[in-house]
Structure formats: C-alpha cells, structure tokens
Amino acid sequence: MNRRFFALLAVALLFLMLVSFAWVANRSIRWVTSLPDRIEIRFEDDAVTAVITECIRASLTQPDTEMQTQSLHALLRGVEENPELADWLQAECGSELETLRNSTDVGVASMASMLMSKENK
Image (cartoon, rainbow, N blue to C red; front, top):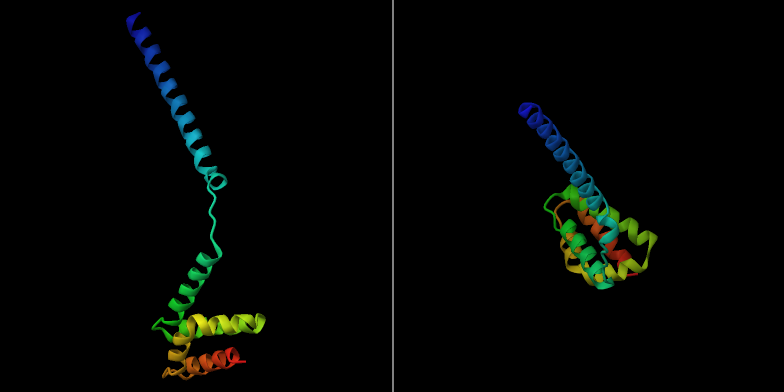
C-alpha cells in the first residue's frame, strides 16, 4: 500500500510539474510576443537626421569602390527624385563628396562630380 501511495504521489507531482512548466512557458511566450505592443520607440527629427547623415558618411568613406559606387548611385537617384536633397547633401556631406570627386577610380569620381554638379544647381 505504501508503494502504491508513493507511486501515485510521484505521478501526481510529475503531472503538477508538467502543468506548471507548461503554464510558465505559455506565460513567457505571451509576455515576449506582447513586447512590441508595450515598447514604444520614438525618434526626434534631429536624431533621425543624424542617423541618416552618419549612414551616408559611412557608406561614402568605405574603402571598397564598389560600395562607394552603390552609395553614390543611390544618392543620385534620391537627388533626381527629390531635388531639395541636393542642398542638404552639400551641407552635410560636402567634404566626403569632394574627396570622392578626386578619387583615382574613374567611375566613383564621375558619379561624385555628377552629384556635386546637381547640388550646385
């Protein structure tokens, strides 16, 4: 009788542990999946501008000419679609564009020159 009682008690405890583990796992998953609804991230206009400016500077100062070409091509498309961007680029990234305009890579230099000439309009 004692063996049967302890076996039944062990099964009940195992069942209780399984149910409690399932409950904790369920609550944890619900808590994690609700995080995006509870976390609110806001950027001020100046912070977004600073992040974008630093990303542009970082992409223009890459030592890889292929990356520089891709960045300049994207900026050229942006200036064609939004002409006001040209003045902002001149003010924020003028020295980087001037450096690329004097690049030994002909493609990079010509694209930087095109971008600088669009900016001066």
